[in-house]
Length: 369
Image (cartoon, rainbow, N blue to C red; front, side, top):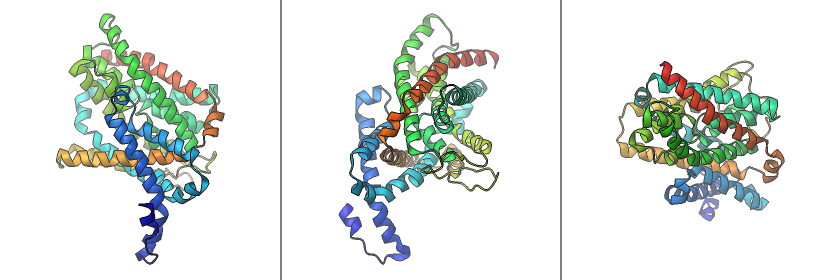
């Protein structure tokens, strides 16, 4: 395939041939890594049982590849890797909106929506403050870890990175942190469910505990893995709460862009392009967040047959996985090593908050609303 791309003629209209030849090797590389990750993540039962998503595998494969490949191969694939990390990643986030509908929001009810919102805001604020003031992390790393813990794991980290103009190493550290403790959640929550059946802390039976799990576990795949033993009502409640939490990604990005109107000035070199226009103190609106909202609205109309929705959702998953593989290939192991234990410690603190603080929020709000 790479040989075919290299043999394309130079005179194609609008220099398309040059661009495709430049991007082709990197796109082919990211696609190959993403497809392998998706096959393993969807068919390896051990990975499924432990909530290890294809996105996590794609990041790992890309990181290993990026740190062992020689400089000549890296140079040939640079254009396609950059395109995957920026444009394809954002397109995948837009298509991620096909996983949520407004009907899901209505089904969760006011109490469930309030629980998701309070868990999100408290986790992000707590993580940002502790990460920067107590652990001495840079603001971007602290915010990325907090966003991933607060919303939907790796996908939230990737969506937040362009707004913060984060570097690849910062994103990889954040993804590693939320994946680690999200995976631990798949082991902890079945145990917590059994305890709650004896000593009721979370009201509402299986459905109530499912909402608690969906509002506090990091990733969608981890929610599915952790709630297999909750019964149908508990598993459904968990997934609905989780998908509504995913939907909150878009307003979160808008709020973050408004809070950082002039962009992040620290260390812009090597960061993600924000995907929006910035000038002075003008708010930078992330276009992919708008696309995400539009896709949720469109999906709520149910105009497309489910087969076509599944196809588009699968395309979005492939684009996200390609973006993750590209992100990993731009990550330096030495930078991760120098970061030390602090990112993982912040992830651990937020993991504890989601379990204990999340339980308190669920119990209090279900009683009030």
